[in-house]
Length: 75
Image 1: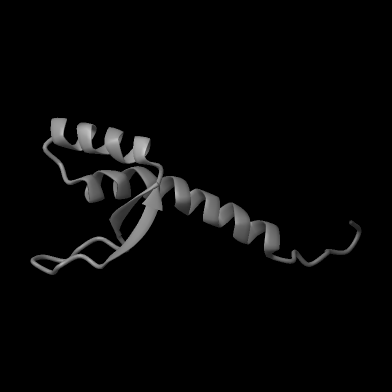
Image 2: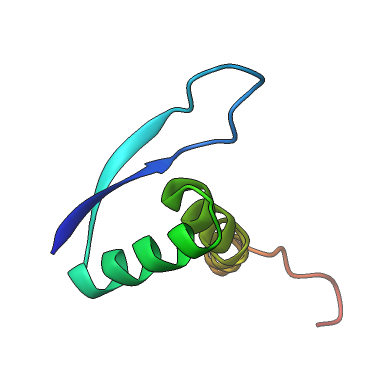
């Protein structure tokens, strides 16, 4: 595994983005380096843009599973 730094939230104008190191399989890092270089985009931004919507949906699904729904009359 290799270590990668990702933004925690989108940066404001001229603010340094908040980041955190995470470990990902080396093949993922290598592919991300190639794609981000071809697109002339930072790997952090590219992976953040890819993961953010997927993880947001997964988070909502997990919260929904754990939220107790009140039972209505006649159900």
